Length: 273
Ligand code: UDP
Image 1 (cartoon, rainbow, N blue to C red):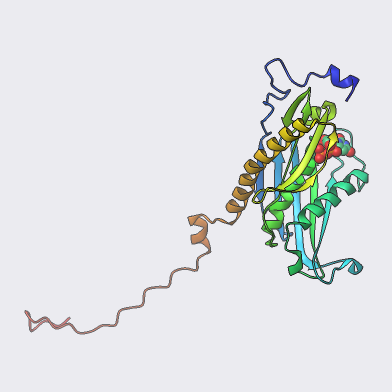
Image 2 (spheres, rainbow, N blue to C red):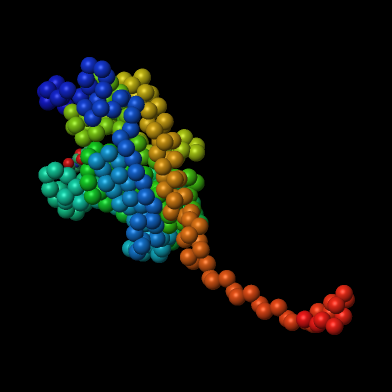
């Protein structure tokens, strides 16, 4: 921000952004459920240049044991960026940023999962950012939510992550890397689409109240679109094509042989079959 921001042109004369999008447009999003066989649930999300894998285990006995809650489950999230996910190698292991993101994502999921049904257990959610291009926490929440559903963990609804911000004085949906670096503000959030409840809200930079309202309106609308992609990924994972259905069906039993009776033909009294 500051001097550099002035040198980078983020919005051109016809209102388009540096990747050709209009302010209200999302980057392309692709979601796939059930991509890992060892985890109880998993999902993979590509969102613009972001690539994120999520794996879920549980509810299973919580470890370390002293963290167990006698009346409910814990949600333990780990957001991690691979060293090769960014242009400068990222030092492996947790840091202040990833600890913070893991914490706020745990809190977001704690408010939708039916925790009281699973006392003393933990739902463990791992999010691995394989490639980062701004908006990784939103992509990670979106992937984790599909992975939790894939694991069959009961929750009130899927959770969708989405961000909006301000770039070159214009409120824009879903900032890309340059916009995140050189823009004026970024507001990532997570929403429960069925109720419109906000379960995560952060803000980097400054917005006027009316700009904040516009940013929220963009993100809430986009969340509906992303939620459809999440549901579609789960449907694809659990719907079976007719060929697959036939392949897993046991072979149809051989028809039983008809018992043989003598048939007397009245019109041909001498003929018995
Ligand atoms: N980033 C990076 N190195 C880091 C952390 C972040 O290059 O150690 C990049 C990465 O592309 C990330 C972007 O900066 O997506 C924005 O990071 P931010 O902390 O705003 O989180 P995000 O937008 O990814 O949720």
